[in-house]
Length: 172
Image (tube, rainbow, N blue to C red):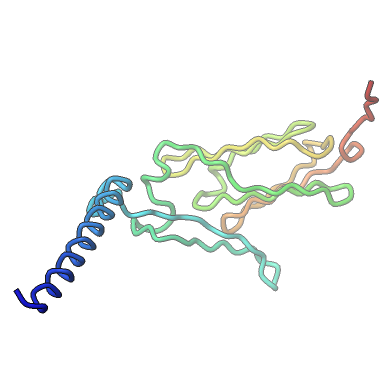
């Protein structure tokens, strides 16, 4: 045996060592994600962002890698009730609530207002949303006004109590 044979044996053993390592790593990844070739192995992402443009018009942009038609993929929401993203702000004597509810008609939205909360519900075959919002103060439910445009629900009501309706508590 000459030196070239020894040299080839060292490198072929080195190659086999790395090939086994790569096979082991692929098997662990496959086990972790349910199989690299299965349909469930692809991570699906869906979301939307809301912003108000310079012209004051609200815009909703969807993002994600789901290829199952427009909007939210059915497998992500089938039978599931989602909580819409919301924002509640008091602006003087007005309480303004903004909720992101894309993909529904305004007639599908059910709004209920009480003295201290607003409830938003949507229950359609494709979309289900539900959220109860506690207001920062007492409100007048009779003054509630709502508009829905481009997936954005905006509700305004008059505040009838002091902000927070809080009471100082002494500590013993």
